[in-house]
Length: 482
Image (tube, rainbow, N blue to C red; front, side, top):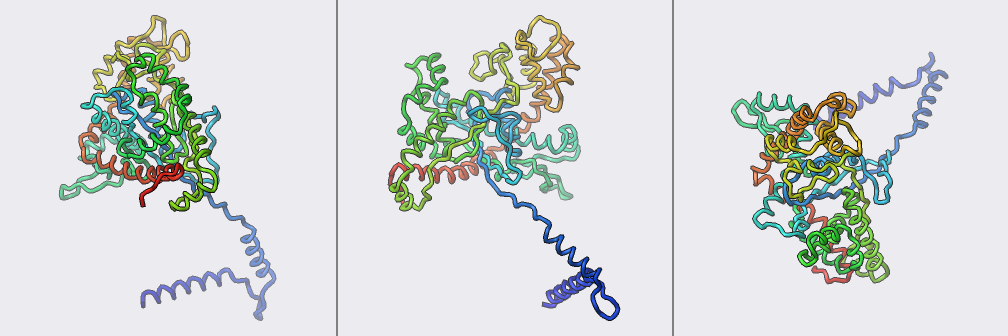
């Protein structure tokens, strides 16, 4: 009580002194001076006239993206998808993206303060649309998740400082990586490791990483949407036609035909505001948009729908939100095959030398680049349609050195022969992949940590997905357990 009283008296004393300092001057005899009165009045008027800054509207944007755990992730996957996704989770923007209609993604209103809520999904249910080796699927799933975590951690390390100085610090002072998510840890005087002040970790509040099959709502909603989607909509899907023509319709499963509906379920479950995808997924996003309009129009209208929602204790707005697609342009440069500069680098290509896998050892990377296809023309140049391999290798060289400009790169290598350039390219790719590979090995070695991250992500995803699934079932008239 004494302490509170003394604090209160001190505050009143400060207020008293402040009031006396701003009080108008008095003339001899005790009357207020005109100058003092006018000064005090003008100050008050100015304060009243000063506009207060507009309060920013807080908006949470939910973003969903995913990757299939089939085969080894290659450089094209990493540069075109995972790396951009990692950057996007902090900035909310891509270097180059457009809407389904081909318009630029609008900049956020300056009076809106947006927070991104990110969900990254390893889509193992999509993977089984083509036969998978049961002995390899689980490892491929965990490896994909570990690689995303490694890419995220590596990017944050690069943001904090140069990799060389961080390595010097890491090895010189005996620091170790803490896989439980508290960044670098520094030995104290007693030899124990205490958490260092660092943010080189996956923040569960920023990104939820989970495995698709760990959230049962994905497959259940896919079945509901299958029953509400006309077959002729799926017959128009180009990817099914391409894959079925190569494999033969007798050997492909029904899942390959209906997987665009599963993709729609993935998106709609999280009421995602934005869905970043590549150009090859444009048609599937259009299908998701059509499904939303059909479902909401058929099941989410009228008094009966409102009554069903009221009985279930749900709001009566439509079950699904129409997603806004972000067609991502792979950083402005697609990574093409090492054996054919006109074809995209692909993990389904039977030629192993056509791609650089993110986890390829340095000697394998160097050998693949040494053997990659080039031409017999002098010099190295960008954007010559007659020299696709030249453009592709320069694109890769630039992509793994994002701080450099085209002009700078051409000044260095434009007049080189292929025999001189290829070792430079190999060194740059190896240097770019080495910290990711090292961090990946650390994450993958700690099974408990990795599965803990996936469990936390699945729990968070299941909470949101379950609410959306319930809303869809109520709209369709299902009996909901109490």
